Amino acid sequence: MVESLVAVAILGIAIVAFVMALSSGALAVREGNQQVVAQSLARTQLEYIKPQDYIPTADYDPDNPDASYNTVGTPGGYTISVEVDSITEPATDEDIQKITVTISLGDEDILTVEDYKVNR
Image (cartoon, rainbow, N blue to C red):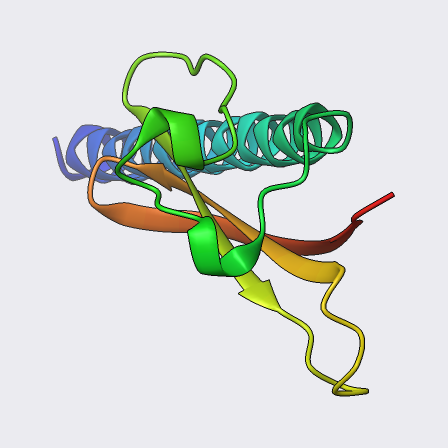
């Protein structure tokens, strides 16, 4: 009887450890997928902004579609925000902008990427 009880206890511990490992693995895979999607969206958004007409920083308004850079479509739950800052060093160079793209999933920011756009 004691041997059976010990065997069941050992088997139970092994099953719990296996289920915990599967759970941790599933969480890691989900987080990895979120990072891959966020990186892809950020790169796509930055490449999408490059050929668009240059909008001077003073005129840029993220709430006005006619005065902001267009964004790419996103899968469910993801959002893209684009911020534009002018580069003032040197003070005479107002034709360079720093573009900051932030990818969010729900209320959590997952990835922020910066690049530059030049008025050509």
